[in-house]
Image (tube, rainbow, N blue to C red; front, side, top):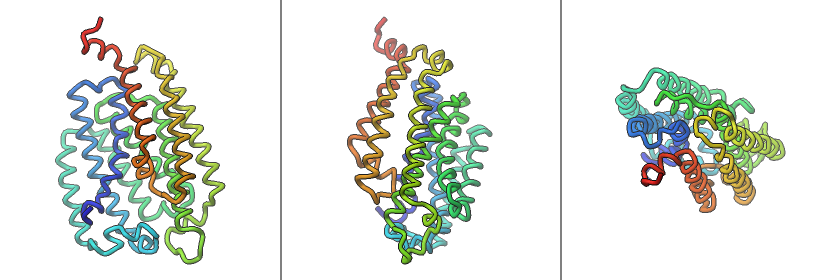
Length: 299
């Protein structure tokens, strides 16, 4: 990819698909108006997250130069200058402004919180043990809330809690991969917070986060509000895909060891992709069973 595209980190836009969770679980997936608004929110968040990544790369450029893989990032490698990067930020913000003109104030508030948290992370909070992974996790939760506020729907507390555990699980696994990649050698002078972690501690946290994710998702599927909204308790059967996904990811973490990019790990594993597709298909069939029957003309 060209340095400009790499600077935007389009592969990280996959995280923004969390914005569509409220659309799916509020039974509006086949409503054109809701879908269009969610797409606007998704594109806006993609532009905004790229802006945050550029700021992060500018702030981290010296540390990235010492990192085994991050030294290839455009700003750290010198293929894009800081003035050029700032110019890209301004261009992204202009397009972002046009996109959010018709989105509501609640969505804009979440956007503001996301920016503040990430700027704090880029310049200070990433150096504080545990706070760094919780800030990363908060980004996923804010995406879910942004998706809900954009289309004015209520989001289940269990779904938000499940998102918290999912994001903590991924953030901790990222730290684990980074720690294995750079090691604890004295030659690495980059991100100092990595020295505060060790593999055993990170593995314990991953186990807790994985357990919380499985339990909160299972409880969401059988919650009274969920059953009333969907008219069925069959969503509990999709838990098998969630459990399989957790176990598969844990296997990949140990098999690939030094892969510190959860997005890359997930999108390059065919088994994981098939499992996600199966989970999504099962959820759509269960949640929209009545609508699908009407669409097919079945009574």
